[in-house]
Image 1 (cartoon, rainbow, N blue to C red):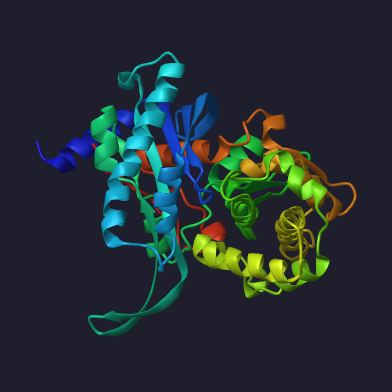
Image 2: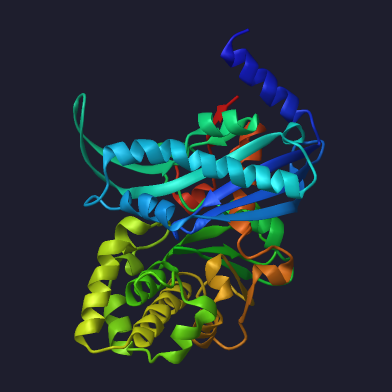
Length: 410
């Protein structure tokens, strides 16, 4: 039997079921570890998703050696092709471990799981087209690179894998991001009020869900840096003894330099109209080094630097709402997910920059653990792919049309 027939048969068998167990894997731009979400997805007679339930969530933190290895690949100054090759394969050993942890915690076996949907680790995201030599002259080319071998993950777990989830959207003219908003209307949509789901990982991104909105009425975009700058400042200032601002304590103890925040907000990304996306290649090591040097020259303490970095993230989020959302959509609540949801200082700074009457809370208050949302989202996107259905939202990514995402490894 040909590989093509095998894949067609697998997809047909998958689509014939009404209940599916899928693991979504996410390792984000914070470079802190792997989230594995084991999800039960129910579908109706027409194949539409009727419910998504989180059965188990497990987090596998990177070791410092692993974090450093991956981090070096996110900068052209430190990336090496030999390391990139090894990390591509080695990452999937971590993904396999996290997947098996979730399966065991749920009291299931690998044979019970229909598929794993692997996002991979983004080491470079280039959503703005650049000139590239083509067969008939210069071409505009953009791209994105997520590391993680689907073949290794398949061999270690025995479970079919969906991977390379952003590429098809980019090929269709989109930015390949954000994709997680696909699940937000299912989990957080309301007929009574408009909501924003704000993920704050390494990068921040917002999903706008008007009251009573259908899936094709959602908009979403990256708001800018999330925890990325704050983490870099803490790591630098403590010599690596602390990797992030735990519970926002340093940010709460410091004094914000509004002048520095104002200068940082002059970055041209913030004035770009959505759809738009960004990543570590913009707000990573070089950006952090410049911030640290500037604030050191001003004589700012470590806590003052963290407070200022926190305020910058908060202002970039609030400004995005003011500039691109609140003028045309009534919003009653902001639901924060990701590591930033665990930082009360950051949440407070966001709250004080928004109009009165808008509630700022977390997705955990709505039954979805703060760090599980993105992994759950990619489980649903992988499910859509296996059903032969598009998983992107063109109004969000800028793609020319809906497309089925990812590649399957049987």
